[in-house]
Length: 460
Image 1 (tube, helix red, strand yellow):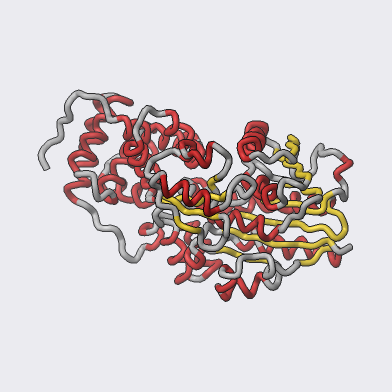
Image 2 (cartoon, rainbow, N blue to C red; image 1 turned 180 degrees about the horizontal axis):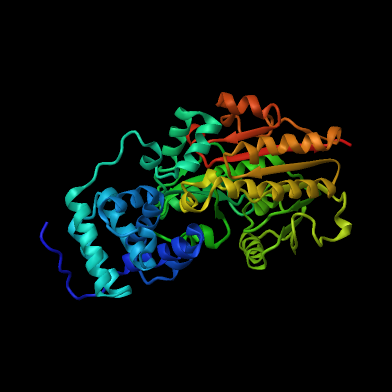
């Protein structure tokens, strides 16, 4: 490959937007799903460029462990000691060289050099040029037997999966976290439209929607770089973006009109609003969250969807400082607790770098405290839904079993099989556990986000 000498034009808009978002995610702890949507919607780019920027962001994050392994092979400098912008630009460049079928190697290198020169200095541009040219020339082979490197998971996280599910299933799960994310799933707001009406509208607009796998109100579609906020169905409150795994929480809860419902970890409000939709907006719902900015999202979503019976309360889901008059007042409590998020590795790939076993263990007391508080605000005969977006048994069935043991005969698991979609229960593992009162959704088995849902009844 000839020496790369990029012309002195500025970097293209899509790459510049992508590298800024990646920098904020990787270096400042921003959430990719929220940050990408927020910033790409504000960029003056067409759908094609937005789609390209999104591919750069999620592609780089999904392969980040492998990317860093490759960089260590060709760079004489420790990656952790590089300037943060240089590190981010290199990572995005490696993804383009190895995993993009549509970007020529020369373009990947030249555009990375432009970014480094523009955002750092000419010296950084020269370093990026040398590292990426060497990688393009030598193309180190990936280690075929090193599954963590191949699937871009840290040895620690892959080791956890292997311990929980065995080596073969851990590998299948790890590979499933790399699945294509060009399709999104939406939930039709049945208060404002039927699934058929929204399907027809999206088809006419050219989005080629298909029915969901399990939930009647689910629609899958490819946005092709278009912002979801650009969809008429979204603007008019007929559609919300939500994975079917999260929709199944509403199915398991089976809320009824006239009930008093408390959602303890409500923001941003997807599940809260789904409960309202299921009841025909005829249940009194209290949405609790400790973060004021995130709680504001619940109100905004409720307003867009036209649900009027949701009241927001700034409060701590562990009960700290919560009003005393909530004691034993709820017919239904939803505790969708903070968790390790390992079931969302496909959608929130930065978790590959941020989560550790130590951090998981640190969440256990919080989950326990939220469950214990939920028990105090539930009426006798009421229902408690416990859910997470992880595949860690210690946060899921083990947490529920510990709760039941500590509360003796006052709470019991209640069967779910008459509440969940029948085609979901064609999976033998889900049919077996749903009859016992819980399900563990796994991406490689059920083609959904990894989720855990348990239905608990207070009987005393």
